[in-house]
Image (cartoon, rainbow, N blue to C red; front, side, top):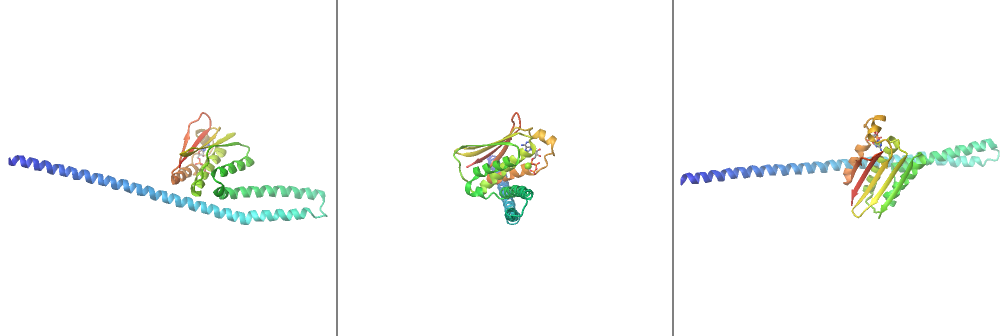
Length: 254
Ligand SMILES: Nc1ncnc2c1ncn2[C@@H]1O[C@H](COP(=O)(O)OP(=O)(O)OP(=O)(O)O)[C@@H](O)[C@H]1O
Ligand SMILES: [Mg+2]
């Protein structure tokens, strides 16, 4: 009898020890998971702050460019315009002035494009689609690429922070296609559905693998920056194998 009680008590004690071990293990696991989640939150916070600082710095440079260079160029154009009215000016000098005016105008447009790309303010009121239209227009003017932009579904608006991040991601992917792919055509398609925005950016170039052997190796910061930006707003950026060229897909769930 005494022996039985001893066995039962030992078993209870054993089970209690096992239970305590299990509980302490699961408590440790929970603590670890909580720690990881907190760490992730902190990383996201730092990333967000970094991006914000970057955008603020860009806006500052855009402001300086606007107030200094663009104003100076516009003023010089105005002065040239007055000079052209001078009655003593010979025909040859008049046409020279006309050419300088044309070049100045071109320069002013380029500076204005740079300013807009640094701080695309207009899209804050007009939205992401408008910003992509404008970006494509600018690129068409500057380079001899064929860029197509297509949009399907009902357009939505997000916070300007989210729209700016999505714009920067699409801008970098498009600029990569222009810089590295040796493509003739770039297609940007935006699909607005009930639940998510999906943007496909496709080029018909040589593909990333070949591009890496032609140009400099994967040493840039653009693709890393894209992933960091996407993480901040909970978007995803993936590449998909296609027979020719490169396809990036950006998805953002509402
Ligand atoms: N559309 C593309 N077609 C072919 N190769 C590409 C394409 N996009 C990216 N790549 C390859 O991926 C590499 C990394 O791109 P990433 O944007 O990170 O750097 P980068 O453009 O070289 O430099 P950075 O963006 O910092 O100015 C490029 O150097 C290129 O080899
Ligand atoms: Mg790049």
